[in-house]
Image (cartoon, rainbow, N blue to C red; front, side, top):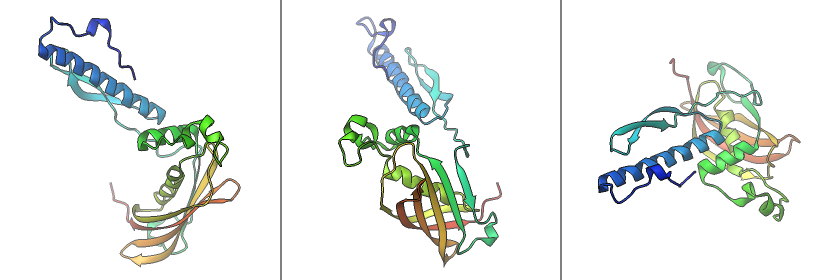
Length: 219
């Protein structure tokens, strides 16, 4: 993000206080937009226009505003589930969701969450740790459990999640989250066993979730 103002837009002593404020505000807005666009670009998202910001004369100006467009699937993602029918859902049904934990995932997660621990971002720093190199954020990897839950037939709503982190995940590794219904709690609530495994079959996260799975709305 650039903080330098072009000479042609610089404030000077001939401007009124309102004009000076407007000029500075314009640069602040533009810098804010640049920063948001950079974050969205790192996440592979796009923006569209529509918001208004101040111009040098104080009048509204249309500027780029981030409007997120998220892909609902990716060729690198794999999903398997025991049933496609909400009415048949019950104990023993499961979803498995597989995806690689890419460099872009780690960068975007650090930016969005604010977790900039150098263990995840700095090769030089991470090499000297017990892991011998960078690893993915644990909560980023655990997010694949949420992705699996979202793929049960119906509308899944989280109520609680317990997690035990058992092994690190290196950046670039492919993981599989598995969620299996182990108990019906009534009123469309379920208890599930949740795990994440790496490509070698090693369990990296073990846990338990309680969710509501409602029927999908018609719209």
